[in-house]
Length: 386
Ligand code: FAD
Ligand code: UDP
Image 1 (cartoon, rainbow, N blue to C red):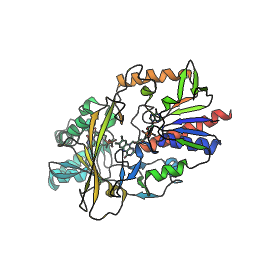
Image 2 (cartoon, rainbow, N blue to C red):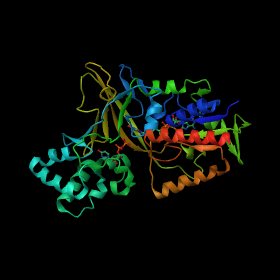
Image 3 (tube, protein in one colour):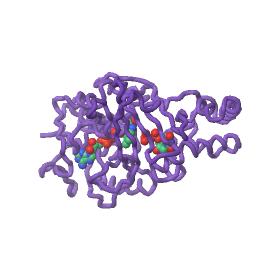
Image 4 (cartoon, rainbow, N blue to C red):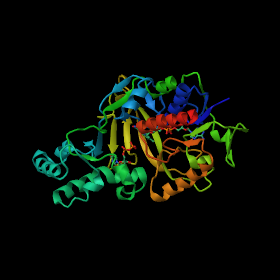
């Protein structure tokens, strides 16, 4: 009855389902274990009518024209340049650390000298990861690197990962490099912002297509079995494609052990004030147990007078698949090798595909996932037409 079964209704699953149904004319069954669509990008109005992101703040950003054009079929946009500040002992500093932050920390005279050194070392408008900046032999640059390391990265990273910046995958801290420019934007991408009506309506539109059937509250493990190279769906042999976007270790009952992840506790608060904080996102880089506070109406552009909803993010170890969500893969050679063991299990099943941040055990942003989903759908459809 179905040509493809897609597991998980985040961006990975939703995009691939739409493409297979629309371009391939396929009948697609989309299974989602939660009671809603959208995966971690799901947004909804809270009891006060404020649009919140249930699984943490999601700012869409991309340089990828194909992705932006594709998603623009399903939404209009509220575009802006996303800015973040860090609360450092009560003072708000622009993050990523940039030449404006330099002036705020060192005063304009000293900052002018330091700026000249940074530009000489790295070139104007360039970006330098903190761990690279720390390696520079010049004493003045080392002084800046120490300041940024101590006041921006060390405590935040210890909270987020339970490890120091130098002990985690360098690509993670390199996401927020020191910018040798006066640009306060958190991201460098051409397109930044929010779906105008929110993410959930975008998903509703994407999934509103004749060939797609969505089944919520359905754990794929209760419907799909893999045995001796054969896929069973509802106890019958299934010869179509399966695209899995959940955690691959859990699908195999953690037979090689659980893949390590970091999780988060989100604590939402509603306040009867017009404005809670100076920017939509404030990072707490030297104090508090939470990493950041997001004030939603400042992200979404929603008008709500004298009230606002915020969320605090408390990072925690992931040790209970029943009660927690695996938000961040902890990529290192050991964990990546464990992932590879699960990946190898699927060699026997050439029509079973892994796609997405969980299934691929990678730190992907939304745009990367949409891009990968579009490419996988192309690949599956091309294979089918041979
Ligand atoms: P998900 O959205 O996690 O979807 C996977 C779905 O599969 C889930 O709905 C899950 O319930 C379902 N599922 C899992 N197992 C099963 C099963 N056995 N049966 C049925 N269903 C199953 N990216 C950005 O670009 N900008 C941001 O600002 C940003 N902020 C983020 C903030 C946080 C706190 C986090 C954790 C991530 C953020 N991201 C951001 C990344 C973004 O969330 C991901 O890129 C995107 O959600 C990945 O989509 P996905 O479909 O791969 O995964
Ligand atoms: N980071 C930090 N201080 C900050 C912002 C980021 O130490 O003020 C580090 C931290 O290790 C974090 C990583 O940089 O996990 C990536 O930050 P990003 O904002 O991209 O994280 P995400 O939004 O994906 O959680």
